[in-house]
Length: 57
Image (cartoon, rainbow, N blue to C red; front, side):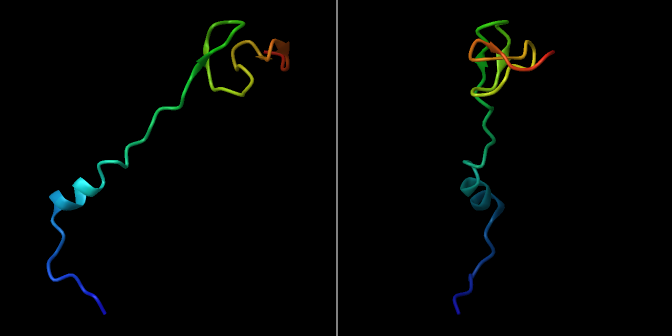
């Protein structure tokens, strides 16, 4: 069985994890109220989706 000969240092471990960052969700501007919203979802501020009133806010 393959066993590491030395303990992996914190530096080496952290270098490997440099790409683990969280990314911010891509926000788009609502065409009705111009508030930021998630794409392909109803705007929580005005209740519109694709220029149609979907929910009452």
